Image (cartoon, rainbow, N blue to C red; front, side, top):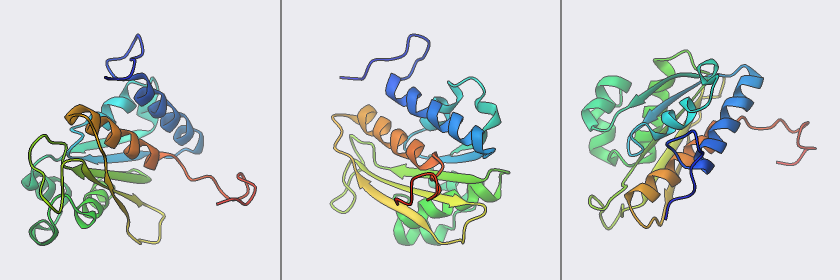
Length: 182
């Protein structure tokens, strides 16, 4: 069962609510974002663009569903795809770095995974999703995560992945704002 949708949106309300937070918090910091999406097929960008004023935050988004698109549009090395696969932290990191390099954004987030119902393997079952975040002013250290979503269906996995990608787009609160807490 899908979550309730906003009256004015095609998307689930909780997805739009998080996208609103992403737009508001990044706009408040003067920060822009770029996306590199695979298994979400543009769902993260769609959620952001549901929010009025999102053009102040979203620089661009790439939907690179095929391995060829990842290589051609984002510069992901065929060696990375051949060695680790498209659903790997190495590939997601290369996608995020490529989106950052080809944009004017301050931060880029990439997502790639197996939404199902087919395509899963013993090592990467349906629900396996990888994420990466690259920061323009960062130290260049890779930020990536592999998550297993237990979705009832393809749509549920894609929505969970979009929510996780949006979370990565939220600005990290400086220690002074959080009272020194991590």
